[in-house]
Image (cartoon, rainbow, N blue to C red; front, top):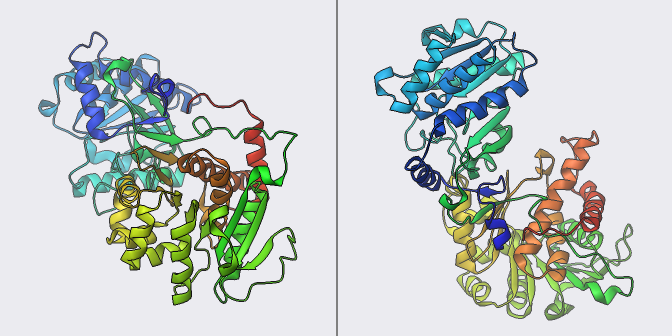
Length: 518
């Protein structure tokens, strides 16, 4: 990222760990003036809440936890009551245990006409007609310990009620039970408040945008509580959004197919040639000058749907003169290993996918070849493939997606796209991007082959492997989003359907004003 991005360290595109947020908060508290951070958080949350209810006569239920998130909830209730909103609070926490700021917010709320109800009455209260539930149980405070049985019951009750009644749930800072760093449940019980909206304070958090976070955070907004930018560290984690991806250069009229490079797709063992065809078609639709479909076995004469593709025996191709995508349908035969070794030794630009990743995980000599290669490299593992490469379990990868994507990028000196909900793009220099596009339509066979093909073309045409990965990941997910927005899916969308929308999206992106962010 350039300095222009750093000038907005508190913006929604910049993401911070829990430890960083605590350090920023500590620095800000040491020099804060009235109103304090908790009061600012309550005011911001109240404004957000008012946008979610149609009028002040519709009652709001606020669930306040035992820590500072509870203090934010008390202040939110106070501000709503001041605005004439009928507000009820259920308090989970002993008053004497609250911080001084939280106590002050609690007392203000009690004096303002907010109704306080006993926590044992929650099941009864959830039979009433609420316009909004505000989750102020736990913010980033619930990170290292499991929720107790009472809290689990509260969260389950809230989720069941909101699902049944379809009323909005606003989470303060993060949905209770979500790890703000990883996007996974704080504890093994897997119970998290399912919010429709989250207002997060001080800075945006990675866990809201990957893993379970995509399912439970809803629409995320960020309020930095007017904290000075000088209190923020230089960010290294960013959202991969339309605001941040580099804009491809418009094509010059005075150009030809040689201007846009060659892409080779290498794979296609017996019975798996479709993977090569999908990747090759995606590379073609992303604007490669020429695309070679290299088959390990039984090369087809031509692709009847796209005769522009040049079908070859994979062993006969010159891998040093093109961007090479290796892995789709490759298999794990001795012949596949030989082909992969040749590509790792000669290619100057390569995308490693599917079975190529599995072979590299199994063979140390291939890992060494990949690590020592000076080529531009993109790896596109799903969690199981990443687990094999890191010699850990899939669950371990998923429990800390950002960390393992970064470790894998460092281990193999390559840009890594760790696929999944909120795909992680990790650069060997330590920068991390969390992709913002995509939906469950991508959870079907072949979509990874399509992504690999897109990466192959954009790697051939981009300045760095990370830029190619950013654009590819965003445009791939965006295509799925557009298809769903048009009324198809997400159930039953096929990988082939993505390809024309990828072309449309890339052309629309290219026509826009180039970004100044990166």
